[in-house]
Length: 243
Image (tube, rainbow, N blue to C red; front, side, top):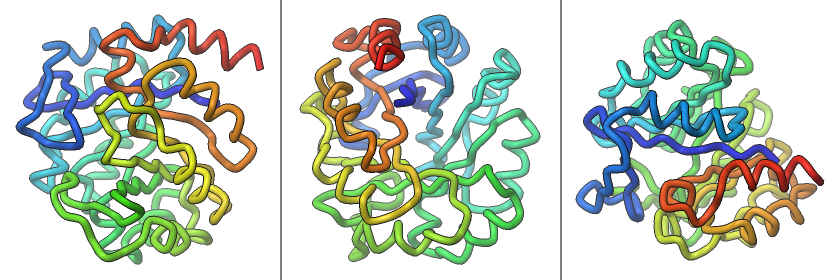
């Protein structure tokens, strides 16, 4: 089970939102590089970055922070999402040292775009599916579509997508526990590995996800829990490595 610390970038700062609401922001650090260093020192094997401004504006807005983190840790896999709507942006991130680009809103609007990216950048494309009550949300979670998360994921079954990041936005940042049932349902419906996201609060949540890892869950993203200290990242790594 891969544990991925989340670094959410807004206006050059490291923040956390509740349920994706930009107006409900907590600033945790003015230095994304220092934050990344903290998680790497706690044993992180991959970092999950989100350009929140980009997710809402439809174009990258925190590229400098992303590049600085990638430069500091050139051998560490980094995945980035938020505002990636064209191949040029993917190329720029890969050139900067990012390993994986996460396609969210554009994957809903234009699944063919994802398939083209997978051909152009094999092994580098992740699809981010954010859902509320099983339905896909887009545009920084501001809109809920009529597309189900499972139907969308199945469209990419043969495309070459590396992983699916599945976020239950009703739980994200709320510290109410991960939606294991919905995550397992999605993972069992596809052959693409799924990264669980949203609501992971304490070590018990990680333990529950490890129990269902065989369903196709490859990792989980840790956000508010590691910033507020309800999960000790180093301790959590010791647990998953002991299995």
